[in-house]
Amino acid sequence: MSVFLLPSEMGGPGEQYWSCHSLQESLLSSASGYSNYRGILNWCVVMLVLSNARLFLENLIKYGILVDPIQVISLFLKDPYSWPAPCLVIGKFFFFFFLPGTISEATGTFLYFINLSVILCFPAATVLTVTSMTSVGGVFALGVYTIVFLKLYSYMDVNRWCREIRKAKARPSVSRANGAAAHALVTYPGNLTHRDMYYFMFAPTLCYELNFPRSSRIRKRFLLRRLFFENYYFKLLLQWMVPTIQNSMKPFQDMDFSRMVERLLKLAVPNHFIWLVFFYWFFHSSMNFVAELMQFGDREFYRDWWNSETVTYFWANWNIPVHKWCLRHFYKPMLQRGVNKWVAQTAVFLVSAFFHEYLVSIPLKMFRLWAFMGMMAQIPLAWFVGRFLRGNYGNAAMWMSLIIGQPIAVLMYVHDYYVLHSSQAQGGERGVEL
Image (cartoon, rainbow, N blue to C red; front, side):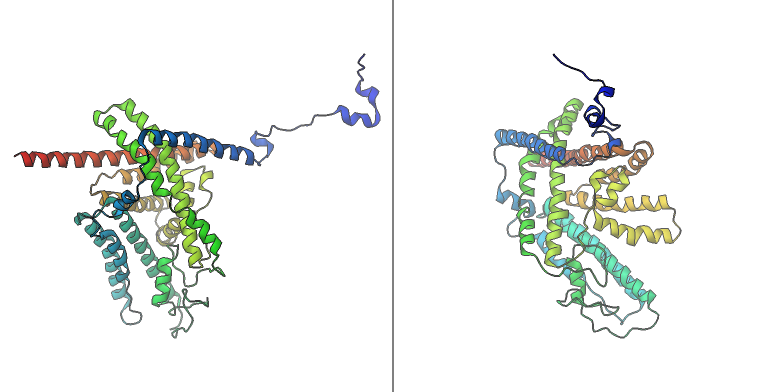
């Protein structure tokens, strides 16, 4: 026989067992304030690994193992006796020159801009004219020269600022430069040494300083962990992306829109996964590896771009070295000259769009402006997301632009490259027949 007691009949200490409810939100509600989602994050990682493992296994069954060390090397070297891309990269060291205290400010500025112009134009002309230059080798060489261009521009700007703020003529400093073993503070013009410049050229930053923050020692275990990841990026690219791109050509030729969308969605997953792998490989693994070797102390190469609720927040936080350069040497100087904030932001996107196109069209030896237009399309997208979307909706829009936008650009360039070279091959065959 069950006996039920009313709250009034329980009395005393028994009341604490009767009351089991309180005013509270469900854990998955934003109002709950709960933030420990570690288990859900682990679940997402497991699901991501399992889903991509299925796709990777399907790729292996259908196409076999495509990873070939010789094929990886051939991406950079078409002719084993001709190494134009490595020669270009080695040749960049001959563009460094400065003559402190021997020429006027105007003459020095003129020579510096000549040097910067040559740094951009010479490798581009070489890539366009040398037939043994591969597209991947061209991207690599132009990427190195672009980094050198941005570094030298920063070097010029900072030393000009140092000259402007000097109140009296400084006697030559005997302090040791940034690359020295003893990290003594450097003052202008004591920084004008080849040792200092070459340390900056190899340091994982685009913004020059007279005294960089330095770490106390080199951690060998840290270097080994970073080096372990370096070997897998190109293997993923060859094994996963190439077959999908090759299979996408026929729908584009036939203008079969339903098949084009299907190919786009199929390419989106591996493309996005490889982009994430590239981000981790370059901004975390490689740059930390270089920073550790050079005892470079500032390791903020990225911020929490994955939490971006606006497009502008993403572009300001996924590539901190470039963002700092744009902010320091381009955006703020424009504001100081009285340029409108919106115009200055648009100008930053224009410069970024130029370099994106510079690094794609020249190595491919064709000019289609897809990368340029893709970057400029970020301006209206940023306005739309900032105006109409907030919170999780803005974050979802950012992820969608990454996952869908990049494959569109990849397919457009691959399609145009395929059409261009197939038409040239057909033209050559007609010439032979005639």
